[in-house]
Length: 206
Image (cartoon, rainbow, N blue to C red; front, side, top):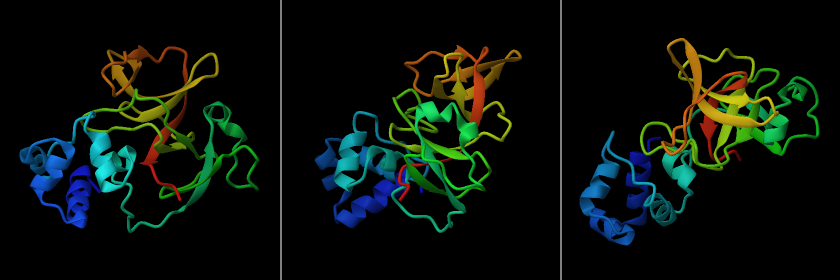
């Protein structure tokens, strides 16, 4: 569900008019109308916490629409791991009894492969005011057994074994790691290892 639909339906559940909702947030009625319009604008980052608070959801749920259940049925569940464990994803085997490394199990709507795992987003480097945005606390479903292509969102491990989440882009034959937050620089992929492609993105996993 789009953010525009989440806001529109959330406001209506509250029984508020566009003007009442706007006044509660501290914006104009026109701003609310733009937020609720199909393919309209999204609230600015500074406004998102207040909008989410009024709707009774998290900022991540506001931006992804994951507070509304879908009609799709989960195809299984995969382990939620830490950033350190993500770098050792090959110890994950979804076809044998689960190891004691996971923080919990996450239901998924994509096909589960042997090493598929879930990872929580940390930091704000992948937050954007437009297009895709991945707020802190969101959950990513990662597929290591998939070839990464330009434009994919990927998990990368550097030479020190540290993992990072970025978008893979290509320019003049070279690969780069692009954050969605313009405050962070684009960096060459270099010798870093792509350990997985993001297949699914959600906030609520119970």
